[in-house]
Length: 98
Image (tube, rainbow, N blue to C red; front, side):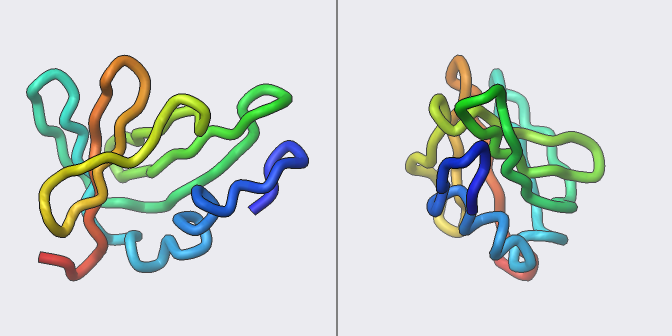
């Protein structure tokens, strides 16, 4: 996927394969709390002139980060766990996954 003239194959795979996540669960684990919503989409959009912003959007809230400052880390089985700015942690699970 190309944003701002740069290719982002890693983050683009989530946008292109979002059908397996839409309808699934987004959990925001920030500051020891756990908020949960249904995933409605995944986007990768320009963030300034030279970068991109990756976002998982939900019915009630969204979580995301600039691709230069976020990533995927370890977490519970069945979940994809993301780490963004200032230690913000959130995770997703595809629809139909246990």
